[in-house]
Each structure stands twice: as C-alpha cells, then as structure tokens.
Length: 427
Image (cartoon, rainbow, N blue to C red; front, top):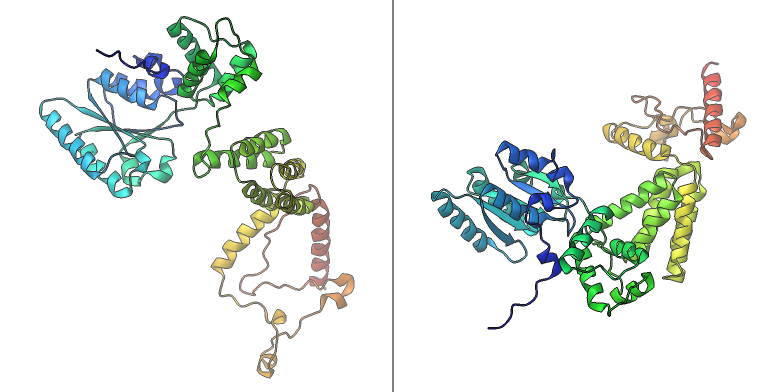
C-alpha cells in the first residue's frame, strides 16, 4: 500500500476549534458577532468578506461542527445551475431526517445574478444556512435581494502579531525553529502580505531550502523565496483600496504616506499612466487654485513618464505626488463646480439676461439683445459690476476661496470687486 502524500503545513495547522482562529477577534472573541450568534443559539445566513488567507473557509467548517449542521462546500468557479439544484435537493432530503445544512459557497461573487437569486427560496424556508465567501465588495458583486437575507461579516487581513502566532504554531508542529534571524523573520512576515496561509507556505519553503545548521538573513531569504508578489488585483478591491489610500494621503498633506502608497502601486504592477491621470485629478480636486502650478506639475509628470518610460519616469510621478502632498489644499473650485452643476440642472431653461446676448440680426437688436451691455475694459478699474445671471435666478455665489495659498490673493480680488459692485449699485 502506497504511503499518503504529505499534507501541506497550512492544512495540518487548520484550526480545530473556533478559539484557535487567529486575527478575527472582532468576530470570534468573547463579544464577537459570531460568538453572540452562537450564544443566542441561532445561526443565520452570512457572507464572509475578506482577503485570502484570513480563515473564511475554516470558520464556516467549524461553525457547521459547532451547530451540528451538515457542511457542504461548493465553489462558484466550478459549479453551475445543475450543481446548485443537486445541493438544494440533497439539503431538502436531509432536512426531512431532521438534519440541517450549512452550505458554504466559495467565491460566491462569481455567480451571476440569476444564480444568486436561486439561493433565495432555500434561504427563506430554512433549507440551508448559506455562508458565502468573497474577496470582493459584496455591495458591488452581490445582488440586493441576497444581501437583504444575509449578514455581511468582514474578515480582516492578519496583523503581524497574528502571523507570528501562526509561525510559532508551525515551529511547534515541525518541532524545530525557522532558520531565520530576527530581521529575516520580520521580512518573511511582511512577504506574507497579511495572508495566514501564505505565511505558512513561505515557512515551508524556508525549511525545504535550509541545510543543517544554516540560518538565513534578509538577503538570503529574498534569494530563496524570490519574493512573493503582493496581493493586488488591478481590476478589483486591491486596486481601489490603494488608489484611495494614495489620494487621501495627498489630500491629508502627508508626503511620506503618499510615497509609501505610490511605491506599493508601482511594486504591484499598476499602470504608471493610470497613476499619472489620478495625480491630475488630485491636482484639480484637492488643490485647485490654492496652487495653480499643481495642475501644471501633474501634467508635466505624466508627460515626463510618457517620454522616459519605466522605471526612469516613475521618479517624475513621485516628484509630482510629493508636490501635491505638500501644496496648500482647497476644494473650493470642486465644491463650486458641483453646486453650479446642480443649479444649472434645475434652472437649465432660464434665459441669460439680454445684456450679454449677441444681436446678429435686426430683429434681435429690436428685441433688446445686447442692449445696455457695458464693455468691462472701458469701465473704471476694468470692471462694470453688471449682473450676468438670469433675472429669474438672481445673483448666486458658488466659489468661496479660502485664505490659503494663492487663493488668498483671489479672495482679495473677489472682495475688491464685491466692494466696487456694491458702490456702483448704490449710485
């Protein structure tokens, strides 16, 4: 009889009790959401949302054991309508014998809308307790009807302390320490990218590579593992999370955090020209006229990258990002634009005042088009102070520049013109 193939370390260390799951105390701790459900004796349908390697499958399996439900697992990658029907029929038959079913659906977001709808009847009548797992934002990937019947529970990426606990368990399982010095151990934890399963896989690779008595430092570890690419899907949440972090770091005037997230995006293979476009957006949304040069710098950086290519051109984008992070901030134009857009939609049919309408025909001149218009360059201070809004709307104020950066100068101009307008209207 042939010996069974050795089981991977991650499989051997799979928790046997909910209390053994690391890094999810907000769900499984004494006051955690799942703990409270179990204490109440009622387990409803749930969607587990979180990155890979955080324990979603393990928790679902342990929940079935704890509540004496039959654990049935399917994957949306490999299953279709026929597989779902078979699982539902088996659950109904099981229910007739008094046994409930916990149906665990891995990557549930990969099912289309019609397939997701097929879960609704068996969730409603209690045929199954559905536990779906997804790495993608359920708000975008799952339909509203399914979400209204299931509670979304967020699984968090593992903190370094949780990864360290897993490595300690691995060392106990293997009955030997990881052959790493302190700096290399810290590097391995970073390489795991907060993924528990990945950390154990990396540990296995280290043990395989080490000769008797050998201890690796950071340089040797990097050579052995050839570095693990960070978890980052340019089409999904990882992409949006990092660009959001970059944007908010710029807005928050933190050049160091800005460089950190920028380099993470470069490291993960993000398209640099996409980053360049986002920097242009940051320049106009968060800096605006507080520093009019910000837009010029962002556009120049995009053009510089286009000219130099990668990796040389990445420095131009980094320079622009730091410039934006250290520039004075203002969203006054952004806010004014949104407000003006709303008013324009509501008053889209209002006629501009006749004084600013052209009169290319005699009829239009006789109707008063252009009559009374004063050419600002011929007026004192090159300012007529006329009201250019539709009469039915009246004068509006959208742009309110703050006393920061270059907009301080713009504020002085606006205040000056407001004073002139008031003086001339009072005549």
